Length: 576
Ligand SMILES: Nc1ncnc2c1ncn2[C@@H]1O[C@H](COP(=O)(O)OP(=O)(O)OP(=O)(O)O)[C@@H](O)[C@H]1O
Image: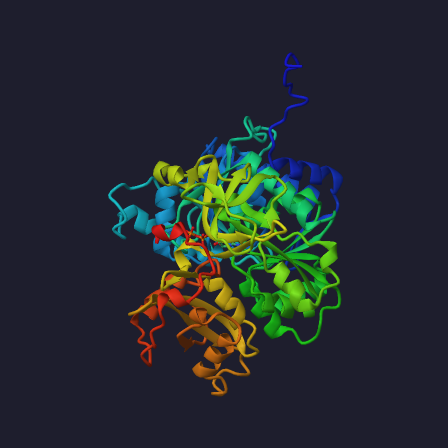
């Protein structure tokens, strides 16, 4: 058996680039990308990518060079997901919601050879480069070499905006694939993308993906979500977020149509449903409120939605499904090449009432097909927690979806792995049916009188209140209990300002739905919750606010021992 060697014919490095070559052959005349009045076929997209890859090589971009881009969901950003690795380089799609100082920090760290910038982001890019040049943000004495700046004008309605000497379409036009053919992937472990974490819990870190990880994650997710051939995929999720949870590559794999919109406004999304017959989209739960607020009648044809990025409260899932969105819930993180668990739907759940179905769907689910294993462990012993739906531990992962490591950060890389597992920093339980439910990020768990309170659980109850649009619960200092839950609540428009919902009412609502020690002692009404650049609630900012708040009435002490322990003590709390 061992004498049969690997050959070029039977051992080809796994790479998502192969999806584009195949799409150009199988779906050549099918629409690949639509953006405003502009559209391309897969044959055209393939040619454009070959040309751009050639142009990059002509600019001396070579293996492992970083090519950065700041752009919304446009054809250019889509094409770069293939063209940059075809040149052997590593794509770094930068979050468009970052300010110049944060972009400068990434440029300084990633040291890209080329920086592509969409015409609407010229200001932030040039300010960032000035900072890098002058070290003006106090970010360190090392001055990174400046990248070549290439502006991406609007392909549909060119504006003429320019910075530097090069423009994207010129570069595509002058690329010569005969002279510079795509650089073959030598090793599937080679880097394909560099994505910075959103910095919700700590300073952003550069996560490196391999061709192999990107390929396998894409394949697994397509299968698990049940994406058939030629889907019409709406780009409501930013492509910069884990390469659009790998659907940048995935839509090519299925010969689908990418419907690109610059921003996921209600108008743009509903227009896309009506005009293009969208079949699939991804959406963080924060987008559901935008869809709900603008929807006047149920959709004419159902849209498959993959949600994740933050816990979707069951009540919100129920509301959005009533409109004709069919939701699949997934869990993931930058370090795991996007989605790494899916709440796989079981037929026997179909017959359950909607609220029960939503409750089951709000769980994060089972491991991605291409992952070797996912588990919840007590980090002290590295033993798996029992499948009782109550004992909390840390979610750990093992498999090809897990990142290569953090770029230029060996210490953080070493800390992220233990005993053959990647540690997610998320706290969860395993239900008797093997489905994992995330209870919190370890840094967000509230410890009251020695007991762990899952902020996600309290939020899920708050979302059941008919007036609540958004809710976030964080720890607030308490003289007796150490910490106690504090709720920040944004009301639906029809309730806001009407004075109809009082703090007392929300507290009573919670008291009827959860153990009393979990009930928020303070409810703060806000217009909107503060969110970070990927739409996640900024709990750090809320914790700061909660720290400054005072409880209105002295809280009657209850003996610590009187409260039954719902959960086993968390090992993670030591990390707080
Ligand atoms: N379906 C989900 N349910 C609950 N939480 C989720 C879900 N999907 C993602 N998350 C949360 O999002 C986290 C991953 O977020 P991401 O990788 O985008 O950046 P970040 O973790 O916010 O940034 P940083 O690591 O810098 O704080 C997960 O670890 C988890 O806490």
